View 1 (tube, rainbow, N blue to C red):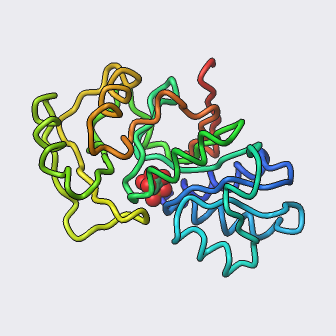
View 2: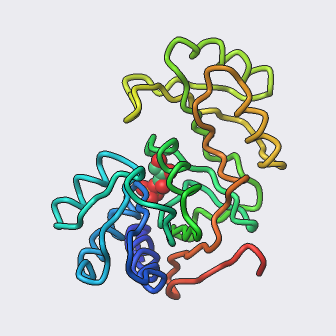
Length: 220
Ligand code: 5RP
């Protein structure tokens, strides 16, 4: 089974958690499968809040109404992918560069359902370079701080986020304490969002595997 087929299995299984109302929707290739599945039940939901322009376009093409987060209250559910998850469902996200809006919609949601292929589950976060969204004028300043913390930041050249900022992908971090690192990096002037999602981890992780979709919860 291909990685993409595993992503699709996880996306399909996430529909079980959708109970109507307005659904928070993330970004990425796994979420694209979810959006396509969501289109099949669009009559049962009121619409979605999107975490990126690209997901918004895909949902609109399917005729799914997309709302501004400011126009709706808290969401019951947020469905998004991840670049890595540990067994506590702390995540690295931002491979697609949508981490800021993803973190906002996750924070506004009662339940965060993460969908991924099985290769995303790791013991320790950090093999995947950690994306950090930075205000453009602070790029070098933040990069120097990240080097002091032991990382190797690489500017994602040519990429601008939906918020007009830049991304530093930080290599060579072994993230043994994700919550502490998230708090620490959040405090650096110029940092908009850190791709560690540990202060607000996922509640459920659905992994696509050759044996079918497997569900993990943080307390399992
Ligand atoms: C985008 C993300 C994605 O969820 C993450 O990169 C996973 O992507 P994919 O589903 O394509 O593997 O955080 O900012």
